[in-house]
Length: 115
Image 1 (tube, rainbow, N blue to C red):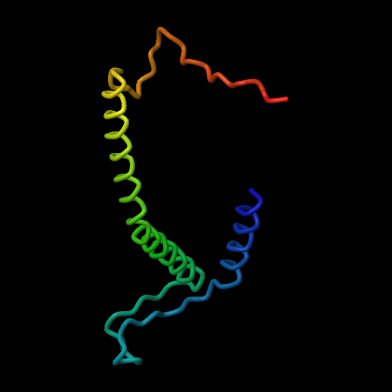
Image 2 (image 1 turned 30 degrees about the vertical axis):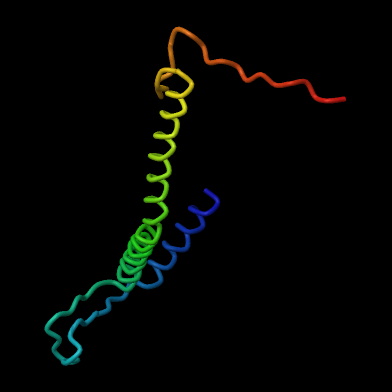
């Protein structure tokens, strides 16, 4: 709320102050009669560009973090395999992620502090 309310007030004030229409041309060769142009209020143009920028930035961040997600998946797979090997060497049944409803989990046993 500390960020959202002031931001909403600023956006509303900006929209009220910039209601005039602007024409955005996508034709670099003809300034007088553009082949592709859009006319819309200035505040709408800036808000659309802001939304587009946030989406592009989010996509770029997601793509850059791909190697970390892949590494995490690989490490989880490796940990699962090693846990199965340890359980097999100790003679325990394979550990399940589903807790046993009949028995509560074992409590952690700590040694008393020294001196």
